[in-house]
Amino acid sequence: MSPRIVVAGAVTSVDNRLLLAQRRYPATVAGLWELPGGKAEDDEDVKFALRRELREELDVGVEVGERLAETVALSDDLTLIALWARITDGVPRPVEHSRLRWVTAEELDKMVAGHQLVPADTVWVPELSGVLRRA
Ligand code: DCP
View 1: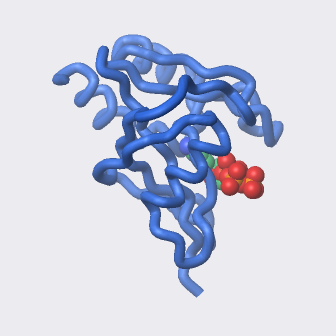
View 2 (view 1 turned 90 degrees about the horizontal axis):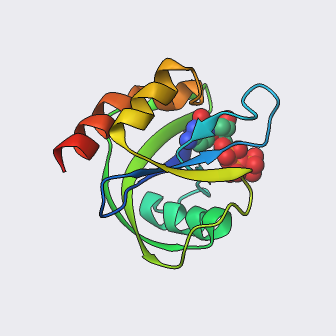
């Protein structure tokens, strides 16, 4: 059986900030920040899955773009990917997370240095931070 995909959103704003969400659970990562997202259903298109997850978790509509380069094997049966996204409708609110934050590239780098990101998501930091700085 092929691994199940977890989709995460690299949601950026017009002023070059990235949306981070603080996890409530499980205990190992509670309090750490992540790109919001969740598990795709079997055979669900990944862009569709991300739109569904961000509606559920942030109560917003998003337009989904390209995939980020890195893929993370979370376990034998879970593979994590990220896609760029922009909010097209609504103001994000933390439906399932404890808090949300829009961060600049500098703030993102500081959070990484302070081990405030969930470990898996750190693979995307060079690409995220590069794009936020270049944009
Ligand atoms: N994950 C991650 N980084 C992200 C998003 C998710 O490392 N940016 C990991 C955490 C979990 C797995 O992916 O190990 C699934 O994520 P969620 O628990 O957020 O996904 P769901 O909400 O779909 O799962 P559940 O229904 O189990 O709550």
